[in-house]
Image (cartoon, rainbow, N blue to C red; front, top):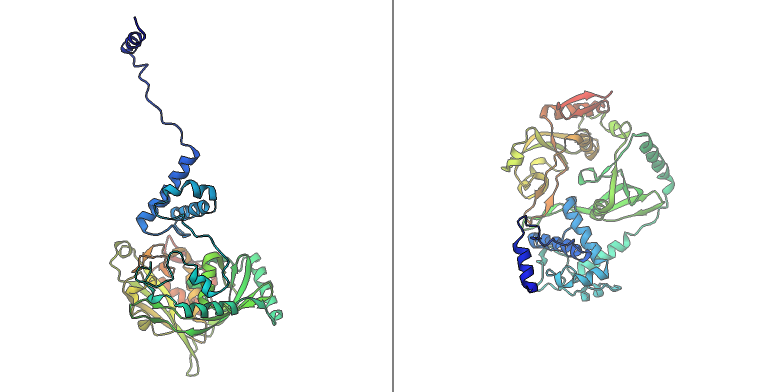
Length: 401
């Protein structure tokens, strides 16, 4: 009997299927895992038409870190070239830029060219002359020694002490706690935003997009330096890597309000604190009971909210004025901040997308009955707010223990 006949006889006489061995899938190699991880980045790009960004969404942030890690590793870049269908790894080598002309000449993707085939519509983007002016002003804003630092040094020591004692806290930065006479932390250094000199007013372009007011700041740093950065630059710096320091619960804030109810013709109006309800048709907004926005404005409230349906801070929908308080002889921003701090546990957490599809997380919407909000305003004016806290589960005000 030949070998073939013997083997055929063996395999045909296998009643228990012991010889019917299925091929097993080998473990993935390191290269295969690298390719698979990069394909997930490609898939994100295909779905969203953009690279992953360093945002709060944990999944997108993970893809962003993964992509940066690949870009920082020449070996991984080389091995993934044939899988780079979206040119995510086609990053031009950086060279030293010595002038504005170097920036515009170093433009391999034609992003700055302004032609009809460019990637962007440049109607809202600074032109070359504006870029030069902005670079010049940024140069002016570099830190320099603070000549009168001796009058600020005790303030920094006081803040450090109040942080240790718990009278102040380090909290997440958002636009609602960006205000004059407030302390912030950037890269581990405390600085004091003393003032903002506005040179550009809030306005709307013809296409309906909002241009926010801007101006020079005076920022004093605890290392004895100061800067006059633009307001929007300070905001971006804090959003990227910064924190806010809350006001002391028992010092200057309450002092601002203790005489607020004795208004005369000589008193100076300082703005409006308002409470709004949303008229959104979005089901996830409509179903929330006792949802209100607490904000402040230096102009009449109806004027401020006339373009509410175009602004993410108003949930991209019309709003209704529920309450409005005109303030006198006080820092209206601090008044608003006290309300925000009190209702911090009831802050709405929802994603809102603007007309361009950009994601926003509004910070000034809170879940609390209107009669509770009105009562808190009274407690602030009476200087008693430090004795109470808001209990989210029962939607009530309770006394501190």
